[in-house]
View 1 (cartoon, rainbow, N blue to C red):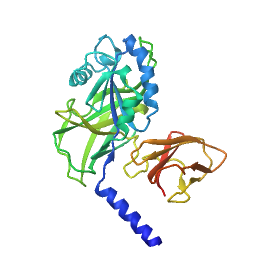
View 2: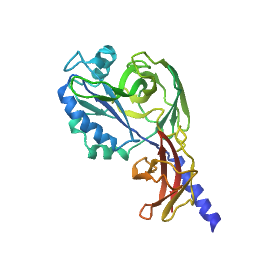
View 3: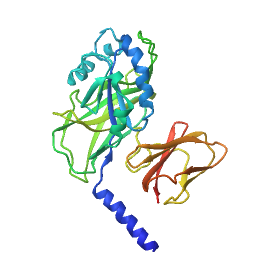
View 4: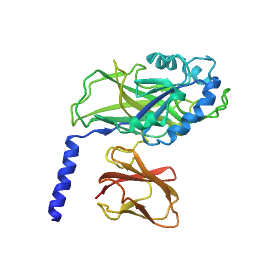
Length: 328
């Protein structure tokens, strides 16, 4: 009986790999301006909204010249901020472009629209590995996990500053994922996507400029179709790896019984202060909470979960580790 169950599980996992699709990150390009009063009033609500979807999106703020060309972040790179706004024919701020195809006023983005994107998958995964320091070397793997899509594609790579503390004239004090400079061509590098099951490996390099905060810099990479402007997928060094284990190792833990029937029991090597998140195979958040620092055991009731493959992520002190488990 055990052998039959094991055989079924192996065949089940095999069938998933044959029909594989990667988690598709929601890609949000946010056009704003540090002198724009409307931006200053709308942007905080936008940030509060997307915070609920952490781990499921990539976000980049672009600063065009309108309505005020004296915008400090526009002046930092006038040519490429203008080029990205022109790419979508954006003419006002604050504007959101989602996945390259949906353009709207930032105030019109809502949970219903974001929830609708969570169930989507991509034929490609993008894994980014990047060193720290002022001189960056970045390795990018674009893996075709599904059927190769038709179309003409370009890969974009942009240096972004994760958090920028700056007292802007519009009242904003904290700016998120600020676009600084294209490391690829500003209109993307032409690529031929690999065949199903194969990978395309790319290398980028850039130097952190004196006006950027080195510890906050990272490369954001995405693949975009040239005609429809659909973003096929995107990636950064902060993402969980395609193997289901994050690039940064936190305190180690193990799932005590796998598959799991009613209670997911996690045993940690030591007590920590942190939080946990349970996600389905699509990366959608199912449950989240805090880890009790006075115990090494985490007990989560999963009796109401549907059968299938899930992820458990534990994060502490900015580090995280993710492992797979199966609900029976």
